Length: 120
Image (cartoon, rainbow, N blue to C red; front, side, top):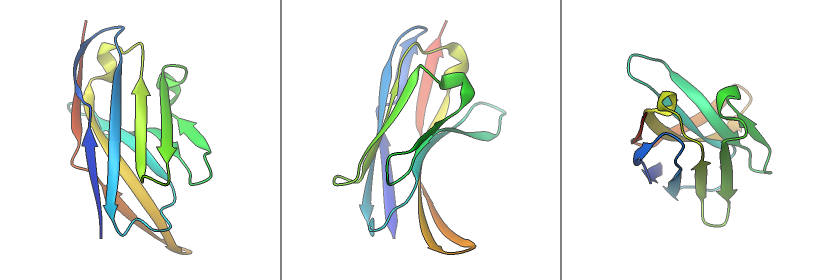
């Protein structure tokens, strides 16, 4: 089993910065894509940023140029540096890890979520 623990959420004024961290423990071997997702009040959970095991990244259009995802495979951590935060970035942020098992079967693991609140 895999456990994901997020940290670094909090409250910040618009224009400020926060850094989210996610540490994976347990059976972390061969973990493939890791990433951050968010869910605002009354909204669906959306992908914010992902990073593959070989470092390829993908971002939600609205965070491009403001957020940076990074990953340390040796430490089994994934971080999200968030700059120029906007009130619309307010959400619960979740860490996600995926492990490819075989075609059509990928295991997914989620953290418990961390609240990010950006005030105007």
